Every structure is written in structure tokens, then in C-alpha cells.
Amino acid sequence: MTNKNLYLSRAQLVAELGRCLNCKTQPCMNACPVNCNPREFIARAKEGDFAGAVEAITRYNPMGQTCGLICPDKFCMRACTRTAIDFPINIPRVQATILEKYRTAENAAHPKLPANGKKIAVIGAGPAGIAATSELSKLGYLVTLFEGFEKIGGALNLIPDSRLPFAVIEKDWQFVNDPETIELRLNAPVDNPERLLAEGFAGVIVATGEPDGIDLGVEGEEYAVSYLDYLRRPEQYKTNGNVAVIGGGAVATDCALTAVANGAENVEMFIRRRVGDMRVTAEERKSLLDAGVDLTSMTKIKKIGMDGALITLYTCKNRLNRGRPEEIPDTTIARPGFSLVVRAIGSTAPRQADSELIIYAGDCKHGGSTIVEALASGREAAARLDAGLTKEPAAEQSPESQKS
Ligand SMILES: Cc1cc2nc3c(=O)[nH]c(=O)nc-3n(C[C@H](O)[C@H](O)[C@H](O)COP(=O)(O)OP(=O)(O)OC[C@H]3O[C@@H](n4cnc5c(N)ncnc54)[C@H](O)[C@@H]3O)c2cc1C
Ligand code: SF4
Image (cartoon, rainbow, N blue to C red):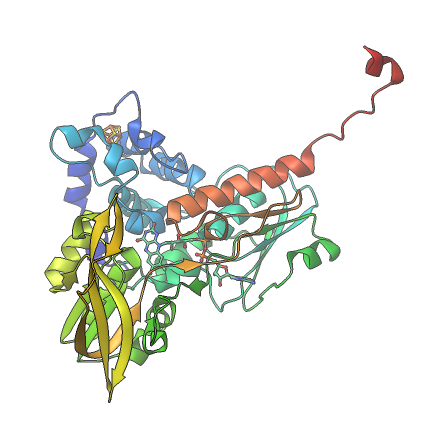
């Protein structure tokens, strides 16, 4: 089902294609972590060769439609030459629209190397695991993708449906999934990657994301709900009272907008730094303004208390000292009357070192990032594992050659 608001209309698509300058230096491609080439797919679409455009988009990006809906504007769009003239081409939306309207099994199929009989395990079916699976399957491996949860998508499942319907993630997956070379096992957590090597897998890619929400480290922490719980089951926390969201990034923004959509009377975000420092796109900033979310900046949470059924936040003001927020003494105040407090200051996972046969990818390796960076990391891990598995054993040196 097509959600009209998520894609460009035919007229909007034609207009965006027409604005492209076909820049020889391809700044948009150079800015893309997966090396996708907007100049190429836009040129093909402009000529009416939509099959060619789909081929160009999906060549390096196995989740091109999902990416097109949620990719932040700091990559290709920031690099777009058109910015200096008027405003950048909305490359991600052009990409999502082309795939939504024109992708078929034929034009999205890419060449595969013959089967090599080697089995690889990928742990985690978020973007990094899906990209690794796609790449390894093209390289001729048999891939088993183990996912601990009941569905694919990883952290993407926490993004509200209004921005990213699950059907889009599923659609991208349909074009990756090749039953001849890929087996997806859902509800199949793997605790120890080493065990898979013992079971006959030639190599393992671990792409398990960052599943542990970061604590505030303050008294009364338990009265705040983690964003992981909140966004997974927002209906459980529905309230028409006041909601506080602690955090100022894209995830906190999703929490605030979800609270508004769920009927909260007032939603307020508490941000450590300045509003201008928030790590959100222009579109996200606008959505917050449109939804009437209050932004309380340069503020630190000191303590959380419970007063009957309502929650009180004890906050103080911050100032910047060499760019770092620090508390201004004697500025603590009580902010009573919240029905719900959501903690959204990030997540983490224990970092592990790669070995030759076990390679880590995506957020579990690099920390919280973006879909396109996780995809790039998954592809890179697959290429590295393949290089390790296919390299010729070093030829034994003869005594003569050692002398020279
Ligand atoms: C609310 C929210 C909004 C976001 N918005 C955006 C956005 O607008 N734009 C953007 O680019 N990025 C956004 N992101 C970030 C993006 O979703 C992540 O960077 C990306 O999903 C990371 O991919 P990953 O594959 O490394 O990890 P994840 O997506 O976290 O996937 C890890 C997968 O591994 C599985 N797993 C974990 N442990 C095991 C185990 N032991 N065995 C088997 N499976 C396991 C998990 O169930 C999960 O499916 C957002 C993230 C959140 C939380
Ligand atoms: S930078 Fe912008 S204008 Fe130039 S080729 Fe890329 S999309 Fe077109």
C-alpha cells in the first residue's frame, strides 16, 4: 500500500529530476557511505530509463527504499551542488519514490558468483546484518541470518510507522532474500558466535546493534521509561497528561512525536545543550515545531521523584565551558506534574574485537549511527570476511629465498 505522504507525486518527481545538474565531480556520490550514485540514477530516470535507475540504486544499497525514507540530510543532500543555487535535491525521496514505483524482480536483480559451498552465519537482522547477508549471498556463500527478535529490521522497528512503515523494510528484504542462498531464522538469538564456528560455519558476522539504553545516573531513574520500551510498545504508555522526554537527538524526537500522536496534552523535551546543537534534520526540527513540542534547552536532570501518580523532575541550568555543558550552581528547580518521563539519551553495547573469522559490524561496532552507515559497515564486514576466506595460503619459503 502506498502512503502518498512518504513519496513524491509524479509531478514532484519530474521536477526534482529536472533540477539535477549532472555534476561531473559527483559530490552526492562521494558523500554517500554506501557509494550510491544519485547523479547516475537521476540521469537514467530523467531519460525515462527507470529500470536502469532501479539497478543503479540497488547495486550497492540493499535497503534503498527504507534508506530513502529515513536517511538524514547530512550525506548526499548536504553535498548537493544545487544547495548553492537554491536548495538541495531531495535525493532520498527521489530514490524511495523510484523504488516504490518502478522496482521489479528483474531490474533489481544483480549478478551473483557461483555457489562456493561455504556457510556463513550473520547474527542480527538490522541494516548491517541485512547488508552483510546480501553481499555474502552475491559472493556465492550460503548465509544463515539469525535474528533474536520475531521480525527483521532491528532498531528500524522503533521508528514510528508514520515515518517508516514496516511494509517498506519487508519490501527491501524481499528483494534481498534468495531462498537458494539465504535462510532467515527469526526468534533465534545467538549468545556465542564461536559456537557457530564449531557447528560448521566458515565465518560469522555479528551485527547485534546497541540493545542497552543508557542510564541518566540520577536518583529516581526507575520512574523514567527507556525509549527502547517506549517506542517498542507506545500504546502501553498512552497518556493524555504531560510527557517529558529527556534527550535532544533523533530518537528523542521520535519519542516526543509519538507522545503527541498518542494524545499527550503537553510534550516537553529536556536537552543538555542548545537547540541549535540538536542532532536532528531540518525536517525533524520542523515536525517538532509543528507538533507544538516544547524544547527546554541547556538543562540537566538532577533527580526524578514521584508525587502520588505524577512525576517530578528536578532540573538545573547548564552553561557551555569550552563547548561542554556544565551545571550552573544553585539553579535547581522542581518541575512537577508529568504523567510520563521517557529517557532517550542513547544506547550502548559492549565492544568486541574482530578475529579473522568473527567480524563485528554496524552499531555494535561503531556506536549509534544511521541506517546508511550501518549498511556500509555490513557490506565492508562481508568483503573483509570474504577476503580472509578466499586468500591464498602464504607459499612456504624455500631456504634459498629466505637467504636473499
Ligand atoms: C527511534 C530510532 C530512530 C532512528 N531514526 C533514524 C533515522 O531517521 N535515520 C537513520 O539513518 N537512522 C535512524 N536510526 C538509527 C538506525 O536505526 C540504526 O543506526 C541502525 O538500525 C543500526 O543498524 P544495526 O544493524 O547495526 O543494528 P540494529 O538495527 O540495532 O539491529 C541489530 C539486530 O540484532 C538483533 N540481535 C541483537 N542481539 C542478538 C543476538 N544475540 N542474536 C540474534 N540477534 C540479535 C536485534 O534484535 C536487532 O534486530 C534510528 C534509531 C532509533 C532507535
Ligand atoms: S550533487 Fe545534486 S545536482 Fe549534482 S549530480 Fe548530485 S544530485 Fe545532481
